[in-house]
Image 1 (cartoon, one colour):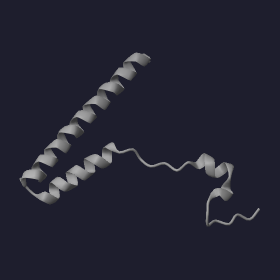
Image 2 (cartoon, helix red, strand yellow; image 1 turned 120 degrees about the vertical axis):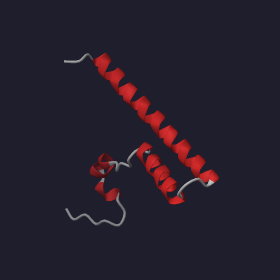
Image 3 (cartoon, one colour; image 1 turned 90 degrees about the vertical axis):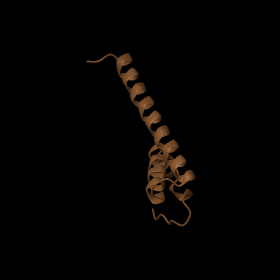
Image 4 (cartoon, helix red, strand yellow; image 1 turned 60 degrees about the vertical axis):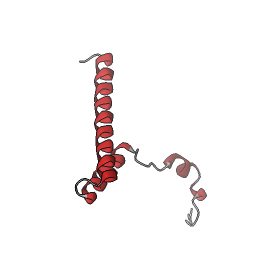
Length: 79
């Protein structure tokens, strides 16, 4: 079983490499879009896809809904 420190270090290395690669992709896309090199549609898709990869997924706060289901407007709850 691996030690916790080695797992944390591996996660940190993986995160750092992913952020560095996304940074390179975003910079390359912006440069190519700015100067008009290559296919504009391709670089737009690459840029938006990489930004979508970095952005966190939206989450619904289920706990608040479960505590007070009447707080949701437009939904009738029959008990």
